[in-house]
Image (cartoon, helix red, strand yellow):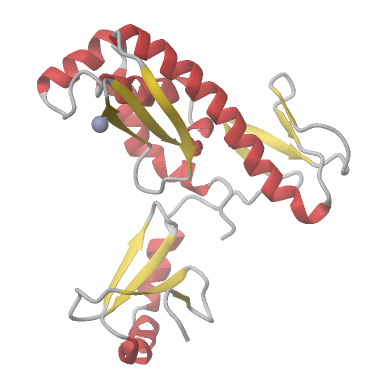
Length: 235
Ligand SMILES: [Zn+2]
C-alpha cells in the first residue's frame, strides 16, 4: 500500500504521510470535504485506521455538517452565479452552453464524459468572467496584468504575484458559482495587491477605493465558502 490512501470503507477519509508529525493526527478540512489522517510512517497505518474507527462518530458529525455535495450529473441542481441552475444532458452532440433565462447549463456529451465536460464549461465561464473583472480592476488601480490563471485551488480564492511590474493572478474556478459581486470582489482584492502586497490598512483603503462593498463580499465568502466547495463534489 502507498500513501496517500483512501479509507477502504469511507472514501471521505484520506491517509497522508507526514514525516514531521510525531503522532497520528485527524483533521476535517471543509475546503476539501474530507478528513485527513496524517501519519508519521507507514508502520503506523494500521494503528491510524483503528484510531479512525474509534473516532468514527466525530468524523461523521463533522462531515455531515458540510453542505450536501452537488455532483455533476444530469438533471442535478447546481450553484451558478449565486443561483440554482439545472444541469441538462441533451445527448452527445452540440456545443455546451449556459442559458441564463431558463437557468439551465446544457452540456452535450457521451455519458461517461458528462461530469468532466460540465467542469470544463464552468472553468471556461469562470475564466471569461474573471478575465473581464481583472482587466476592469487592474485598470482602476492603473497597473498592467500579466498572466491570469483559473484553477482548482483548494485553500485560496485568488492570489497575486507581481513580477516586473505586472500582476500575475490566479483564481479558483469555483468563484463562478458565487454571486457576481463576490467574484468581482476577489478580482478587486487581487488587483489591489499590485499596489500593496500585504493586508495592511493602506491595502484595504485601495480595495475600498475600487470596490466599496468589499465587507459584504468578504462576509459572504466566510459564511458560504463551503457551498462553493460542494459544487462538483462526488460525496
Ligand atoms: Zn489578499
